[in-house]
Image 1 (cartoon, rainbow, N blue to C red):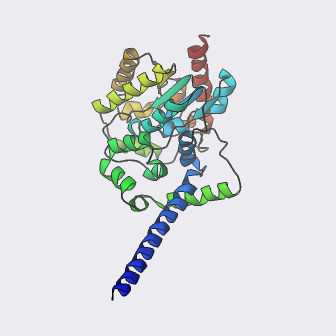
Image 2: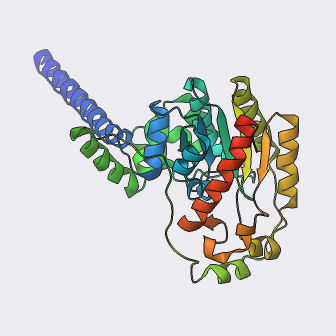
Image 3: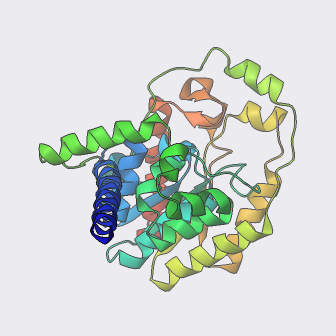
Amino acid sequence: MRKSNKNYGLVVLIFSLTGIFLLWLITFIIDFGVKHSDDTQVGVVNRIMDHQIDPQIIAFGASAGEVSIDPEIIQKRTGLTCFNSCINGTRFLQYQGLINEFNAYSENNKVMILSESYFSFEKISAVTSIETYLPHLNNDNVYHSLFMIQPDLTWKCKYIPFYKYIAATHIYYKNAAIGWNNFLHHRSYSGLGYFPVDRNWEPDADATIESMGRFVITFDPVIIDQYIKVIRNAESRNRKVVILLTTEFSEMLEKVTDINPLRAKLDSIATVTKAVFLDFTTQPICKDKTMFYNSIHLNETGSKIFSAILADSLKKIVYGTR
């Protein structure tokens, strides 16, 4: 009887250990693949988390910066290396983890651009596209930035086995396949993080502006405090921080919201820190619909023109030239 119980216990132990090993193996295979993906925003996050990039000029922000800032033009006009790490749908509170990680390892960075828009400092309660960050939740910088936004989801994704695969969309598994293909074929990410959109003003863009209704730009004091903290951290490492208010179609600002409070807030932040505030919302390009594909996003043609203007401003900041 005792021998039978011992055999049964041994079988249970073997099956349990086998199950644990299989669960670990599946997790490893998926996460390893995603970490090696070079697909758009996931590739950008992976390069920062793997400490693969260390440009002299780097840009952080959301989609307005992602489609507007062409690193090649910046490089040619300034003579400094440049990388665009702006990520679609990602407000400051979410991308601050990437900034903190980059700040911790970078040795070459001279200029850090923070590209903002009217929604940058609104209170948020949901992480955008969490699958972009899932394989890096063991990194404290990433975990804490997401935890500040959606603590329950972030904690479950990190500590409850397989929960993150419930939270992830099919994009996560697509990136796992891309990553394994890259790894097996020894391919590495070589882009500069710029994803231009080559299309004209969208047919429904005017209707969208008309239907939005006027709203007041709001500021979450917690986010503002974190923003200033990140700027001062960068400045303590001898980086010049440039707060960038990107181009927006002028009709949007006339019909939908008063952007002056945002201008004033960013200017005050630049004053209390040593940052430089660049406001491009009054540039002539903002009145030209052919430069945009919707109210806040430049198309590829517009981004080339804007990047040249931005590069000349950066040259003045870096070299003190005109």
